[in-house]
Image (cartoon, one colour):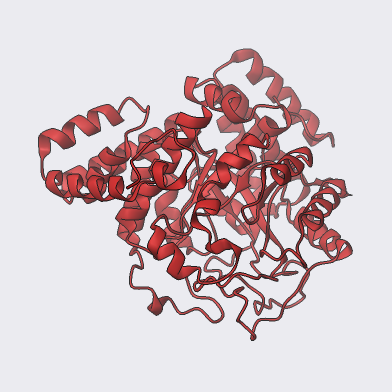
Amino acid sequence: MMEYNVKSFKAEEFINHQEILDSLEYAKENRENRAVIADILEKAKKAKGISHKEAAVLMECDIPEVNEQIRSLAVEIKEKFYGRRIVMFAPLYLSNYCVNGCTYCPYHAKNKQIPRIKLTQEQIRREVIALQDMGHKRLAIEAGEDPVNNPLEYILESIDTIYGIKHQNGAIRRVNVNIAATTVENYQKLHDAGIGTYILFQETYNKKSYEQLHPTGPKRDYAYHTEAMDRAMAGGIDDVGLGVLFGLEGYRYELVGLLMHAEHLEAAQGVGPHTISVPRICPADDIDTADFSNAVPDDIFEKIVSVIRIAVPYTGMIISTRESQQTRERVLRSGISQISGGSRTSVGGYTEPVRDDSSAQFDVSDTRTLDQVVNWLMRLGYIPSFCTACYREGRTGDRFMSLLKSGQIVNCCQPNALMTLKEYLEDYASPDTKAVGEELIAREIQNVPNEKVRERAMQYLEELKDGKRDFRF
């Protein structure tokens, strides 16, 4: 039988089934043990994280005042590391050709209803210009797994196309990549192409469930998929993004598995996940959420976000437009630091004159434009950030994490967020959004701690008004 070993590079040792079961049993035994819970919360207040076993106890606990403490602590930790900044991005779907048989995804190979589309480089160019015209600077490219239709060469060519497009004041400054698990050699090629974060959702950490949900195709190989982040880092990619699709398996199991994966990266690679995504199973063509009995209700979902934020305080947390405006508003306070805006989840969706979701991977709940999302965030007191400075200044991996953990990042992030917001206001915002944003910038620039940085940022903001672009710290 496999034994738990956080530093092992074997999937079933660093995500050990028995260790998860033991952690869940420990959580059940201590769910009302106020002494144990108080010790965990005391440790959590130091904002250096808690273990997967300790997180399982907090997740299992149902004492109302403890749940309120968990939520308040998550808010406090989020503010400590990320302030009120919310990074903006958009997904770009390149192709929905796929050879896998994933039972929860409409791209599965047996789905004959969905129109199969693969964008040409010219179509990608038009999509990117449409995204630039909205104001986006950061994309996450997505493609189904199909070695014939979507080979790595196609992905690399597409990245080159995206980075090469300069339209008016638009530019995509960071391309994150969400494609299937691959080889160290291929990850080296993605690194050399200048990608930002490599993102791969585990879907589920339960091996038995994983194999049932992936009956056919290369994705069926649990170990190869689960060990992908280690290969990516061996290929030179500093920033990797984890995620599970909540609702495929019991959420308690998934939470522990996810945190064990984060602990493994920290222990084996010296740096934990740059981001953690928290998608929930939702309706799509050929997919009915009623088929999945582990669907997660809103209050539990909010608690999951809070517990992840406490357990992995430094990680960026991402929520997509599959969640409603109301849900996104709830979890922004307790942990989320990145959201998408104006998103289309269909291939070619940004240049369709009429919204056509027949090739979509999932239904979008939050259908507002980017301008509406930016306006909403600012009215809630957040700073929408289009910043990509750390990536372009080489502050990735452990270099980024050390800045973040020491608290020094605020002297970069706060001014960079405000300057990229200023670019958005000058080039793309509606009059109302611009008015709200100018007021926010004038107020928030005062919160840059370093006086010299603050003065220089104020000078840059004036120069942005005069037409200059792309200042960064």
